[in-house]
Length: 90
Image 1 (cartoon, rainbow, N blue to C red):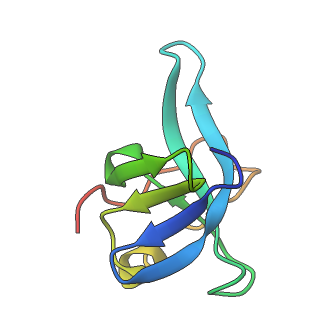
Image 2 (cartoon, rainbow, N blue to C red; image 1 turned 120 degrees about the horizontal axis):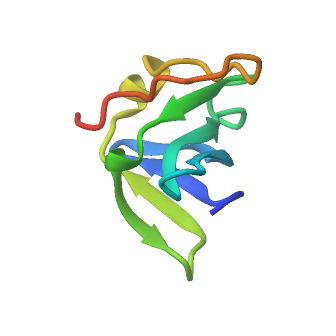
Image 3 (cartoon, rainbow, N blue to C red; image 1 turned 45 degrees about the horizontal axis):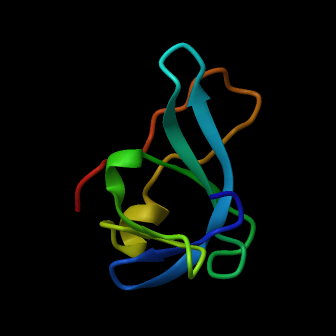
């Protein structure tokens, strides 16, 4: 999924930059979304429950959040040990 384009409910927002994985549960804890093409220079944390669909063929991820909800999501700081993901619903 790294590099997949992210589609919000109201438009494209960027691409998956990284995945934060819980190595004990083998589960994706958060998606780190690079919004540079839409909202210059920002990386935000998005919760996996926000994912509505993944298209392997189109290399894209559709999320159930608006662009504003993504803007309101926590910024990703790689120096912080834990990241709180954005809300999983609208």
